[in-house]
Amino acid sequence: MSKRGYHHGNLKQALVDAALTLIEEKGPQGFTLSQAAKAAGVTPAAVYRHFQGRDDLIAETARQGYAIFADLMEYAYQTGQPSALASLEAVGRAYLAFARKYPGHYMAMFESGLAITANSELSVVASRASDVLERAARDLSAHIAPEKRPPVAMVSAHIWALSHGVVELYTRGAPGARTPFPAEDLLETGIGIYLRGLGLIAPDS
Amino acid sequence: MSKRGYHHGNLKQALVDAALTLIEEKGPQGFTLSQAAKAAGVTPAAVYRHFQGRDDLIAETARQGYAIFADLMEYAYQTGQPSALASLEAVGRAYLAFARKYPGHYMAMFESGLAITANSELSVVASRASDVLERAARDLSAHIAPEKRPPVAMVSAHIWALSHGVVELYTRGAPGARTPFPAEDLLETGIGIYLRGLGLIAPDS
DNA sequence: TGTACATCAGTGAACGCGCGTTCACTGATGTAC
DNA sequence: TGTACATCAGTGAACGCGCGTTCACTGATGTAC
Image 1 (cartoon, rainbow over the protein chains, first blue to last red):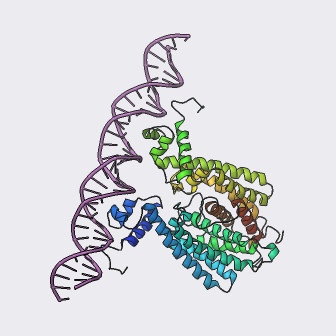
Image 2 (tube, rainbow over the protein chains, first blue to last red):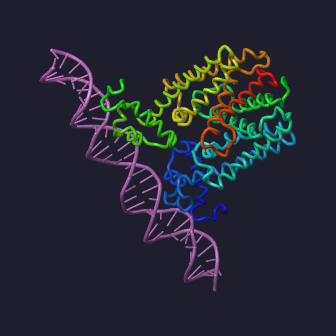
Image 3 (cartoon, each protein chain N blue to C red):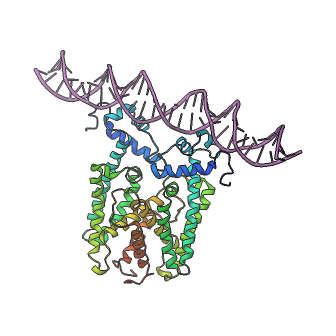
């Protein structure tokens, strides 16, 4: 618990931190339990005091990521209030900022292939994050005439997909997709055009 | 070349096919060269007759994927002509259809972490695909008043990001993101709203 | 303050295993005559 | 049509290695008295 109140180390967190570094370097599948142990300065067997195995270690890493992620999204939402538009845009920016600042967490969360639903603690904290986005989309929807209003879940899915796509394609060593624009600009303008399409921004503002 | 005109098998392609199946099952990092060899009914050493190693095998798999992908995109673009709008929408649908029909290829292309630029043959065929999208975006741009026209590369990046995000989040066992809508609907409506935001579809059509 | 003791986080040796990679080889194929 | 031969795709044995996992152990820590 306290910084030096441990036996040989605050090993559980040290292992998570080691995993994060390894994930950033070689991807969520690109390292072994033994490597994580070595990076934490410990014998592979010691890992089993804290985790069931490699998957469990990654799940804990993802769990911590979702917790940070949800906090950032929540905070961004609050800073935009009471404007629904400002909240949604802040949430979008927070999404990208999180992916940039916590790449290891982001990869553990979205690229490790772990089954979220199989881990109840994980699914709780994961839905906390998506709830924020959905709330922002709901606020927004209230400003659209009911007859031309798409379902809230659809709007939040669009924003999430666009954000995730920008992160995956334009934030790291990408596929065939190179772009001269910073990912931040890409996401901001993309969301802007989308919101205009929803009739929430004046056509030529 | 011919179906039975080989020694013990058309091994190169058999290995690619084995890799595709393994990728679909366990992800692009989730299998070994030996497993791919065994799945193709062959000794691990035989793989070296055709590939430098596992990465090279995955690169070939991705290369074939990009070739199919580019063809599909190209074809979709043609079917939409001469309408710029119809072309763009068809290309979007083709993107998702490819990801659905060729999940192994898609993962090899976008989730294997291979460095496209390090492989010139790969980067050529990869840019063929993105060129189609960019062309569609360029056609579209011509219908927008110059002063309110975003850069072509930005529009194509938006479409690509939205498509990729939809595939990653809503097409497979996803993260915290569940949605009641089929990915196809999600992408179609998303692109629709986006195009409306560009002023290319009448506000309440 | 000092001593005896219980706890339990991490050790290190051990195991069987599958890995990537090499190498000399073999035997089916296709070709020359 | 038949035979001799060159080719070369795939074999199988071998190697050293790092892996995940187990286990009895040890020794630093915190606590009771």
